[in-house]
Image (cartoon, rainbow, N blue to C red; front, side, top):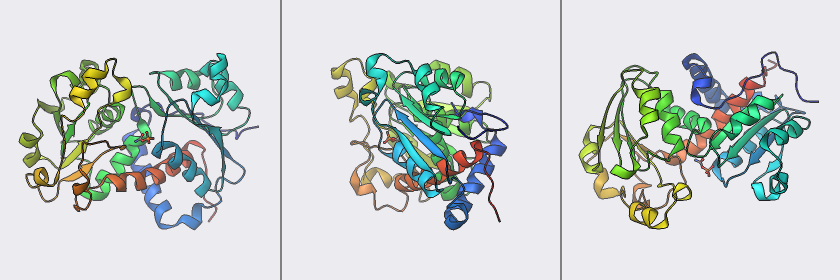
Length: 314
Ligand code: CP
């Protein structure tokens, strides 16, 4: 039997967490990093299920590490092809089964909305670990923490987002989270074919009257940015190989281009990268993309701790 919760909650998008809760999760993650022993047994006897129907390195391994760091265990599958999905089992039935075994679940799925279908039938918390081109809320937790750690704040920032703004679920999640902080401006840098979808503008930018501009050239945007969020062109979401090949190297951030950026402009990327950030940028003190991976694990620890209604025994 799984852990009984007073309030069963799922996280499908960053908007399932209030700004106050996000602040609390960031404080908790910072404390977890500073005092690992304090949290080393809070999940003793609990299990995380990682149900990944789509490939992952960071998200799955950081969820699993997060649970192991809190004393819990992990079950799951890392590809739909090794689960009974191949026999036609629905996501709704799968989560009912997994609810018999685990206390919390992280699900990645190529179809937009699949984790939401699971959440509707689940008796354990479901965390969306990325659904198609839609949302990736725990990547946003990593992004917010990295921005806060590097810039010292989450408000009054000019954030450039560059690359595949059409299919990049991390972009959609990050925008939905950041518009809630005062003084955020976006510079949306993409080729015409990969512009931010209108529904993201209508749902998130317009209601908050968030200032934004759309540009094509990265070089034009760089001098004005506090944060540059680079993204990979999402090969797996293209219908046509030729279009992908035409787009894939549209942006390449390198040492030369970094000279155009302010000394305190940090570069984030959800990773994996392909060619869009040259390895010569990795040693630049403004390269923060591996710090994102580092903080992502602590943020997933803090999120699971919160959803499982855990407490530290002092
Ligand atoms: N950022 C991210 O979601 O990476 P993975 O696909 O490796 O999980």
